[in-house]
Structures are given as C-alpha cells and as structure tokens.
Amino acid sequence: MGSTSDKVSGAANKAAGTIKQAAGKMTGSKNMQAKGKMQEIKGEAQQAKGKAKDAVKKVVDRA
Image 1: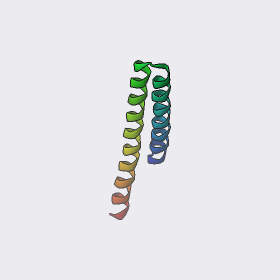
Image 2: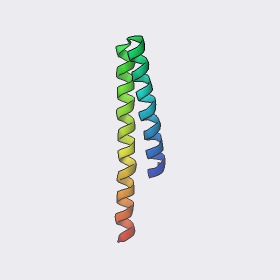
Image 3: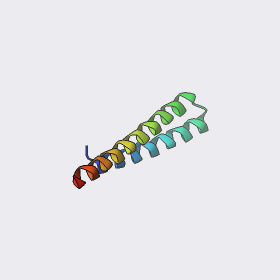
C-alpha cells in the first residue's frame, strides 16, 4: 500500500473502532469494547506507517 492508502485505511479503522467501543459501552458488551479498542489501535498504527513512508520518501527524494 502507498502512504496515502495506509493513512486513509488507518483513519477508517480508527473511526470504526471508536464506533464499536461506543456501541459496546451502550450495550454493556466488554467484548465489543475490546474489539473496538483493538481496531482503533490498528488504525493508529496504519496511520503511523503511512506517515513513516512519507518521511522515507522525502529523504529519498532529497538524495
């Protein structure tokens, strides 16, 4: 994946995770809350990966 698609996928996963956590809280489902938190963390990692790719590309472009 490219850096942009990593960042977009990350944002989508982060948002979906936040929604799952909220739904879990509303229904009292600790399992759904945990799955939502895991998905949110996955999204944050994807976004970080996209940012890292951008940083590497900038360094390579300068060389």
